[in-house]
Length: 166
Image (cartoon, rainbow, N blue to C red; front, side, top):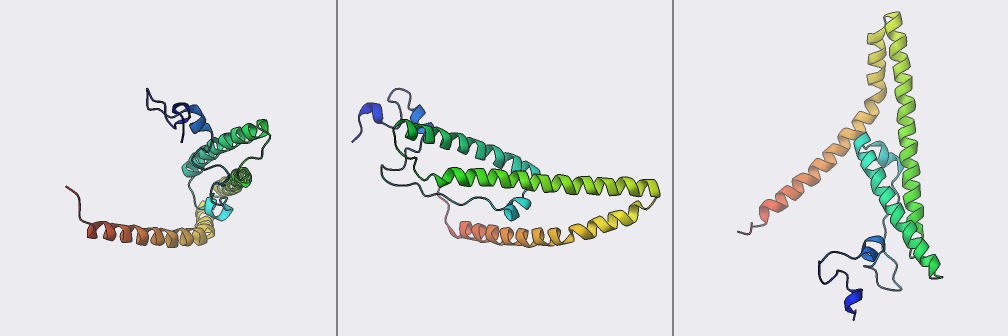
């Protein structure tokens, strides 16, 4: 049983306590939180720039929370729960940087080809070459869109079978 001071929300305002926002309080003492895996570079390559940007800030928030948890555990003379979580966040962040670096290199190379083509007057052949170079990526994305669409259609069909509450 918890005392009033240890409850997950304050009695007066009903807002979460600061400790609940900073630490993993949902996990019972002695249990380690179940965590997922780090993002792979191939998964990140399929994301748009905006999605990578959002994911970056989610990972920063998670990293800050984990570093706070690590410091609190160190101050208590204990190990933090599931320390691999921090490694997974760092690995995902480094992979985002790598994917963005790859995109920047590709962009610079394409830009140089376009500028060279405009000066020589061969810009249509360069554009065709560029479209041909991205075709495997486009095909892979199309196949993944189909998979997403299939799962969305399934969830839509399941929703239609479920009677609505009125």
